[in-house]
Length: 333
Ligand code: SF4
Image 1 (cartoon, rainbow, N blue to C red):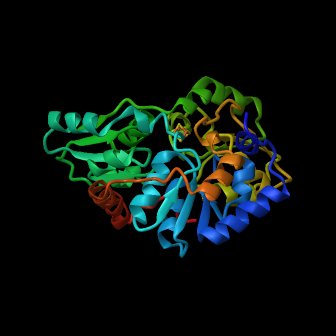
Image 2 (cartoon, rainbow, N blue to C red):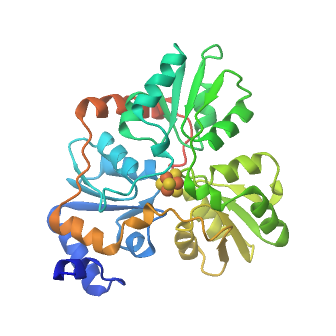
C-alpha cells in the first residue's frame, strides 16, 4: 500500500480531515450534498442532507459551481440533469443502485414497443438514459397522483419498482397499468413477517416507514395491505420523519428504511430509541462513499458525472413534467 492508499483508507475521520474537506470545498467553490443513507461522518460534514430530489433541487439553486454529491450514481445524474452547467462529482463513481440497474434504456424502449401509446412513468431510481425515455417521473409519495393524472384510457408502463407499482395500482385501481419487476436488494432485509413480528412484539412502539429509494417500498406495500397496525404506523417523508421524531411521545420507534436514516432521527430526538426494523437493511452502494473518498474527490476533482446533453435535455423534461403536475413530493421539507 502506498502513502496515497494509506491516506484514503484512514478509518475514523479526525479534525484535520474535517478542516481539509471544508477548506477544499471553499477553494473549489463546492457544495457538499449527502443523502440520508450516507455514513454518519459524511452526513455531518455535508452542507445539506436530504433525499435525492430535495438534494437535486438544492444543487440546481446553489450558488456553488461544483457539487459533490454523496449518494448513488443515479442521484448524482439527476443533480447534473437539473444543473447542467455545474460540475458534479461523486466520490466513488461505482456507487450504483440495484433497483436502477434492473432496467436499461434499451429494455424500456423494447417494452414501449410492445405497448404503443402507453405512458411511461419511472420512479426516481432510474438512470438518466431511462429517464430520457420516460414520459413522467415520480417519487414514492407522488406516484399515485402522477398515475391518476394520466387519462384512464391510456396504458401505463410503471418502472422499475414492483412494490411501489403494486401499491400504486391498488390505490388507483388501474387495470391498464403494467409493472416492471424490479426491486432493491435492501428491501429483502425488511420482509413482511418480520415487520409484523417486530411491531406486535413492541406494543408501545411506533412504526415509521420512510419509502425513500426502493429499500422500504416493500414496507409501504405491506402497510397498505394491513400487515401492521395502522394506528401505530406512520408513512413519512424525510422532513416529516425528522419532525415526527422530534415530536413523538413514544419511548421507542421502529424504523423501516435503510439504516442510515437512524442518524438523523437520533439527532432530532436523542431521548427516543430509534431502532431499524432490520439492522441488515443496509445499502452497500450508499456506504461506498467514505470520508477518505470524499476528501479525494475534493483534492483531485475526480469522478465527474457526465450526462450527454441530449439525454439530459430529454430526462429533464420527464422530471419537470412531474414538478409541473404539482403532485406532492416528499421533498417539500
Ligand atoms: S437503498 Fe436500494 S434503491 Fe436505494 S440506492 Fe440503495 S440499492 Fe438503490
